[in-house]
Image (spheres, one colour):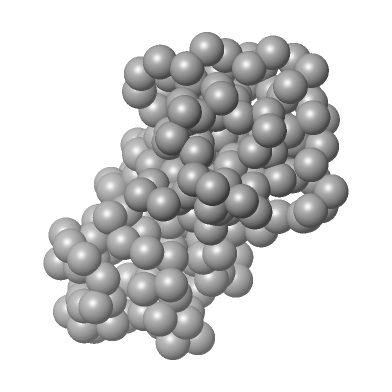
Length: 214
C-alpha cells in the first residue's frame, strides 16, 4: 500500500485542485434534500449520467416523501427501470419515504445514524447528503476516491472506511468540505482506472504511482 503523503504534499495537492475548480459540485441532479437522498441511493452500481436521465422527469413530479408515496411503487419502478437494480431500489425508496413521513415529519434528517437507518442508505450515501446538503465535512468514499487515495498516497487505506478516516485525519481542514468532490472528479476524469491521464494531471509530479502513463 502506498505510504501516506505528508502534510506539505497534501496542501499542495489540494491547493492545485482548488485553483482549478474552486467550487466543485456533485453531478447528480436534485432540487432539495429529499431528491438528493433519492438520487444518491439510486446511484449505487450506476452512473450519475444514467441516474440523471431517469430522475430529471421524475423530480418534476415528485419532490417530497409524501409525493413519492402518492406516486406509488409501480409508477416509481417504471420511472427508474433504466437504472440497475431498479426494483429493489424502488422498494427501498418507498420504504424510506414512508419512514421520513412517519418518523421525521417529511424532512431528511441531518444525522448520519438516522440516515443510515433508512432502507437502501449506506455510509457513503449518508455522507454525500451530509456534505452536499447540510454542509458538513463528511467524506463519501466511492471506487474513484478509493483508487485515487491509494494510488497517490493522498488517503491510503485497505477499505473505504480507512480511506475516509485518512482524508479526515490528514487533509488540511480548509480543504475538508470539498475534498471528496475534488477526488471523485479527479478519479472520474483524470486518474482513471485503466488508463490514467498522467500527462494532463495537475498533481503528476507529486504522485508516487509507478504505473504513470506518458
